[in-house]
Amino acid sequence: QVQLQESGPGLVKPSETLSLTCDVSGYSISSGYYWGWIRQPPGKGLEWIGSIYHSGGTYYNPSLKSRVTISVDTSKNQFSLKVDSVTAADTAVYYCARHWGTRYYDGSGELGHFDYWGRGTLVTVSS
Amino acid sequence: QSALTQPASVSGSPGQSITISCTGTSGDVGGYNYVSWYQQHPGKAPKLMIYEVNNRPSGVSNRFSGSKRGNTASLTISGLQAEDEADYYCSSYTSSNTLRFGGGTKLTVL
Image 1 (spheres, rainbow over the protein chains, first blue to last red):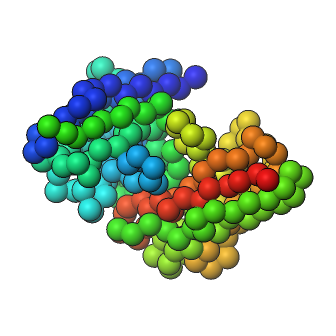
Image 2: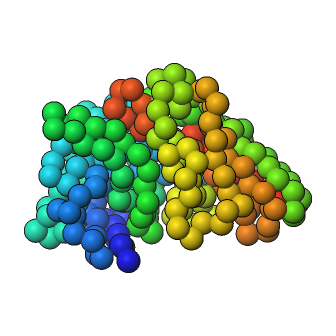
């Protein structure tokens, strides 16, 4: 059974960098799939942050692209999220998920569904 | 990028059927079959209910079905049960190589 678990600080100060890691078990990241991050501000809807292919290659939400970096470490079977210069608007539950998608020889591809999700971790931005 | 358009709320009585719509554009919902639906109970992670417009993952009840016409996708739940009360979100791949979620719909089982 594929399982994902987010970890990282629950409190980040404004203007600092939010860093989260997602540990994957039951499936080897290097075997395939994209791996994605989604967030949900308290009482609001879901927002896709971005996704990374198992061998590299990233897609980002344009509204966050300038502040976000997603990376993958296949040796540790984990992937990570960094969000720079955070503000209170970045306060949310952050989810990691396995992301089905296509990948073509030219590096392009299409993004589909999230089939396995972590339980989510609340990150609060406050001084 | 703005969210796909979903009704804020829908309701139905046990045993009835309801449909939740998800409206986008030809650059997302209308242009691709990568439309998915998720169910989210309070305090829980979303759960995949439908993928690629009308496919159910293993273990999801056949009371849940999906369809698409033009730029609007729909999720239909038949034989409503109390446990179906939750928030539902659609998502779609876009021509900008991104993913858009809908704003979410709160389903109330009366």
